[in-house]
View 1: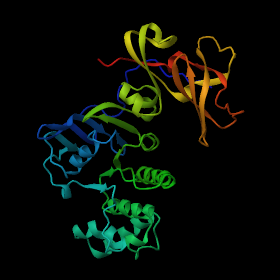
View 2: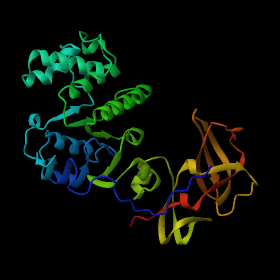
View 3: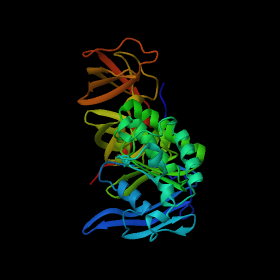
View 4: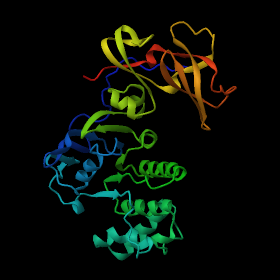
Length: 370
């Protein structure tokens, strides 16, 4: 079934108005000598919202998170929480919990001692510490393991200890610095669900740094896509996927077929192939088409009216469990096509002649880079 994406390629960021967020970053900047790591970022996060900072390595997302935590000094701009300017406030007075990629657990301490560490630094009464540690350990499902040390735990259990240590101080904001990157794929999926469920249950505001688009799409209320120290787009997961504002976002969020061509109104020439889009352009363009928005049928099938259509030959077929991926050579171009295996018929082997179809609204068109 073909899904038609809206034709408006500009996306207004959903969420709080400028300067109205519970957490507000206002012109946040970080410069290392001549290198501008983060450039004048403006971002407002509502109370209880889960926001992912998504981008490739070196895009400035971790630097941004560490400035919010107070671990890296800013070069400009402000960090405001609940109306209070925290830009010059030391880290231990910011009421934030930070979960690191490396877990950063004390190897000589037990689980209970690791979790209690932040409370002891705050000099809370011993009885309150014990009660809050028990509560945090139960929250991450590690009851009965309080006397074990980190070396006796699996990677997933160590990550739960790190999460409990951040939660036990009851922070107003939780900061996650790629906390799942050291886990295997199955465990990452489980921890995504657990972190999101705990965050929603507690209503804690959270920022989650990741380079994994699946993590960002499945966990977040909104996603901030970053590149070269700047924000490319802010929006809900469905906004970024269905209506990417820039070619970078289209490439980075989800898989895509990418071509260059020339546009004349809604018609685009991709070499010898003419395709239609739902938006009008003129001149050199970059074209993106999502693989799962392309339908594959036997050669000779007559497409429905209004659809783009091209015939080609399957070059390679890859079975991935959830979907079948085809590489199809057509009119001098190579298309990637993905079909779900649910209710799927016979898989087309290499050498099969096929017809590809997709809706004009699924032809995403951008002005070509100069």
